[in-house]
Each structure stands twice: as structure tokens, then as C-alpha cells.
Length: 208
Image (cartoon, rainbow, N blue to C red; front, top):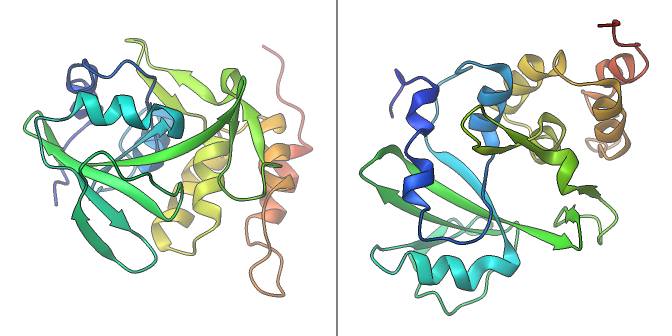
């Protein structure tokens, strides 16, 4: 597992995706790193999000390599021929590229007009693309911290809690309030992020 890379490891991504006509976003822990401006922790892979509607274009752009279909419910991984549709959330695609020292994990996002739609929540959890899309100085898209943490809030892994602690101070009150509104309880207990998010959501930002 590579542990000694900085954010420049992402620089080849536009070249890797040069044949893909659709948008893509850095997601997961690397999106958290981009928002924080530094690598927060070691990574095992590099998460990317594309739109489910762009899946045929993705298949056509990457015919030169083996792509594996991963089932997250059963832990399976098998070759994907580009014809089988995917279920956003429970399934993702993974492949490697010599320019990137991590496996590339591609997850699918749903869309409705100008909105990104979370694969859970029956279409209720959504946010405009203009709100969730952040750009590096070189124009690389990455997901905003509220969306990164929404994905991570559904799990209970130490690395997700670490990313929350690192990103919480970077949330605007509006982002914190949006995320707070969609947190789900852990069993019969409130989500452990609820209390700090409430504080961030109700704390005015300092004037410029």
C-alpha cells in the first residue's frame, strides 16, 4: 500500500481519462485530501465518481484494459465486459493504470437534470452539481466535503471518523446543515457526528 505520496499523485488523472467524454470527480479520502490541501492519511486506492448515465461512454473509453466489477455486498470481483449495467452503490468498477500508483475505484452517481442524486433515499437526497463540484487550480473536479462525508456517514470505520474530524472545520454552516439533515441514526442512537455538525451548522462564519 503506498503511503508516501502527496497530492501530485493525482496529476495524471486528466490524461488517464482523456478518452472519456463525461465528467468525473475525485471522491472518497482523496477528495477529503484535496479539500484539506494535504494528504490526511494513507490510502489503499483512489476513488472516482462518474455518472451512471455515462457508463456506456466509460466502457468505450477503456477498452484497452481489464476492468473488474466489484460487488460490495458479497465481496466478489469479476471481469466486466462493458455490457452489464451496474447498480449504483452496491457495485463499482476498478482498474489500474501505470501512471497512478493506486487501484482506481469508480463509483456511479445518479443525476436528475442539474442535480446529483444519492443512490440511497429514493431520490430525496440530492444537491446541485454546482454545489458539490470543487476544482483544483488545474481544473480537476472533486466532491465537496459534505458529499464525501455523506458517503462515509453510512459506515462505521475508523478512517471515516478520521476524515470527519479532519474535514469538519472546513464545512460551511450551510454544508454542515445539509449533511446533518441526512444523517441516519446508528441503531437507536443518534449519529455520532450529529452533535458537532449541529454546532458547525449554527455557528456564523467570520466576516472576510
